[in-house]
Image 1: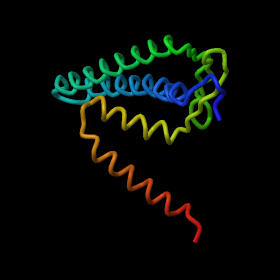
Image 2: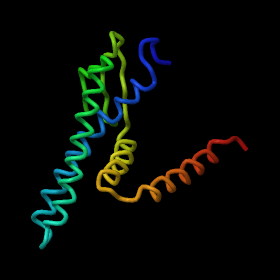
Image 3: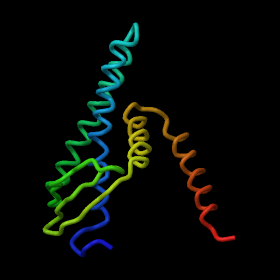
Length: 140
């Protein structure tokens, strides 16, 4: 349960705040690899650079939204099992954590989105996996 001064929407903004810099770093790393590993890197470099520009714009918009809502992330750290952010939202202190597996999955989805790939297949496979997981959790 969130404190009365923090909405679910406020809390939900922390997830992309963690993920977007990770996605940007992954694109940057991949860009450097592609530049040296591919004979004609220019089309790939252009595609990834455009995706990086979109990530940067979204991160800027997110930071502006933080300012409007009075959200301040004062600690973001890599833990043994994932990432943890400590933040203030209009005077209330909260923690947001993400496990590595979720970061990898959500990061991959965001990378596809920013590259302009068709997200219908990704969403369909997530729906199927969720349904399978729900069936496993049901008592016999």
